[in-house]
Image (spheres, rainbow, N blue to C red):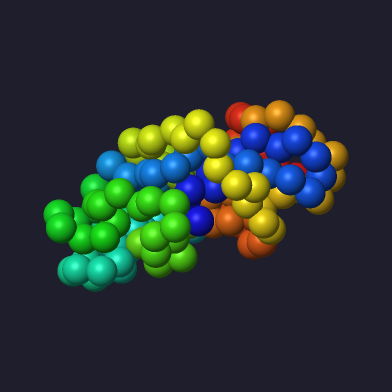
Length: 152
């Protein structure tokens, strides 16, 4: 849920959403080469409402990283604003990436003054302050942010 990307946490059980609305503007993927004799593929498939279901992918063989840069298809739900209380659980894209690959999500956001605590997105440890959530939600824990204070 992209609306939970940045939260403020006051206790081990209470997380408050900072983003009220979000719109994806671009996604870039870099797939790290595993070795000089193996291939690595990265890809983005836009699958939301009105998306043409096209896949943008790249495969590397050797020393250079696989690289994909894509924008949401025009007039698809991935290019619309996702608002709090709307269809927050709609799948907008499917990413093909391996552990250690870099995913750069660029988005426009609207910050809210106050929002109800988000159930289920609070950390299990005693982290407090502003934290960054997993790209695919805390439950899966698959796409953890790097270089910022993340939920744990």
